[in-house]
Length: 293
Image (cartoon, rainbow, N blue to C red; front, top):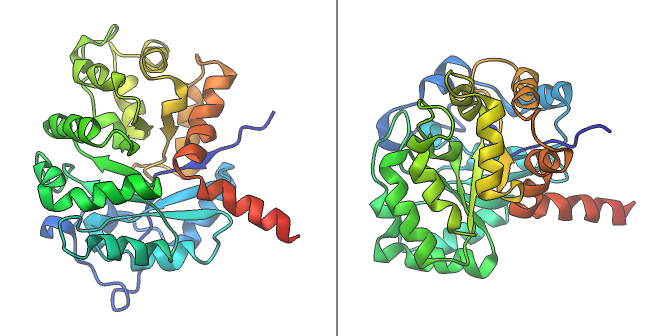
């Protein structure tokens, strides 16, 4: 049976810098966006070649800051296959109104960038009192919040999980755990510690695959452990394309290799089932299209 695949972490960059000017968070543009910029049209070609059915397009905040215009203009061109995951200044007084405006333009998820290759903060600004109206709004509208961070920000992620248990939190790249000790992966203790929070979901990306294939780690020991700790229904795949090297098909093939030791049911959840739970608009768009035919 052909595997249904949904990509919840692709990025796109426009060559039109007048219409879509660069204004990266922290003032530093990511290397990949300068070296491997892919347009929406190019991504569509890649996904069709890779067998990817749908995607939650993640706005590149390390290119455009809080201006989601290019991602929004793109996903609205094909709402049956695409939704957007946008970035908003959640401390701004008008943040809730801003989110509601972006929702009219394909926004199905919010992404907060705490720490990565261009920005390093512990993310405590995410839990400042002025952000509470946004978190409460996320609970009211049942919108997933993706968080990009490293181990430096996991204590703040835990505070968010505790304070706002009705909000689904999606941790990009699994928070980049330390797998250098191999099975049973005791150095990844901070990741296992968070498994008890049922509102925490994990995004598996090629960064995860790279960590899990570097000895003494192995996909055969790490991914079954991950499923045992979190359950496959809290794990979802995202390509991180084109930030990672290789075609989208290469990245999908890498995933098939790394998930080979998992059951068919678990693979189905990771490739598509969890994505549809996190971004139900992807399912609703299909149903609306079928009703119109």
